[in-house]
Image (tube, rainbow, N blue to C red):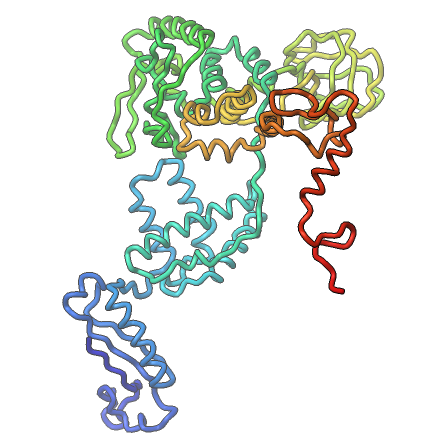
Length: 546
């Protein structure tokens, strides 16, 4: 490999006004004039990998510095590393996203947002070859600060971690393609962060939600998600052809997803997502009842009944058919509509009504909007779903679309527009939290975690365990008691210190000595056998020198 190091400048001949040829300027003999450069001629066999026939560098103050950089560049050439010149981080990430053909629509949309909002403004103009860990660390901090000033929810530690993981993945691809020799994102250390634990609705709360949803045309869908643990997109994509009534099994083979305004029909999220889910007889009955209602809707629409067509992960159109859950016209459901509908129903659980006119403390009337329950009785006052007091309603009168509640006594607190009156209102949850509730209830009832993982379609049981480990605490106590009871022992040193002073021995008897015999001598005897040679009680673990 040919390498040339020389000193150059940009001077011109005073008479001809032409630039001197390489190395011909008479001033180059001066130490401070010009700068050192290097040129490398890439061997023909490496040109396809490197992408250039010649590499160069300039601006070095000393010949030694130029030679060192030339050797580094030559090492990259020998390793077949591509020469990317001034390729910027912004240009590379845009190109990288364009080549990620296997990304799901929702993931692609999120990555594009990461690049547009959190990376390009702070790293976009930097050359990929010069990117370092400190640049990335500074950019992430600036992005977190800037998000505080933008409309919408500011980014937190979890989003910062996701942005870094995406950038690390993108730069790993650059390393694999020999564009850079190392991944600078590997050197970034984020502040410690503990993700919040999943706290879904309890079984009783799920039951109250399903009771409230019983009259809705999508009630069977919510029941399927809550009992079988389906993802939202999987429920939207569930088909009647996938239901085996005799075996009480539903096959999950597709899901409907939405990316901004674009819909698509994709395989389930993970490899294990394509699965068979066992259903209980009650759920089968709910689905059959829903099918009868859907048949009536189909009959009303007639030949215009059509589930629609959506692109698959490769962009090819797929004609949808036999969808379980549709719009009354037959079209597939918008997954975001399903979420909004679930939250509307959940908000009504236990709700009497929402305050529509402010009421001062000591007032004896309260104006609410739509009334969902008979008014008479004792109710809790809520602000942001947190209790702030109680009222007893003794009567109600109508004023147009509103209701005026007459109270048995004066208000103890002032009420604002938007406050709510009800009984055991549900805390706000996402539709996806019904899936979390399904998992937590199964684990709480002793269903094996491997089976729960399979029903949920997680890639591995470890994912299930990581998400719901805090829900297994009671099972941990049971495991501790089980193993302690399973090991036969003649003496338990903790006797009398815990909840029982009985000693369990082999064969299940409660005592290892005859009735009336003291256990103290036996304990001292056992302790003496355990003494090591040279041990003197009260003088430490080792014999003392005389």
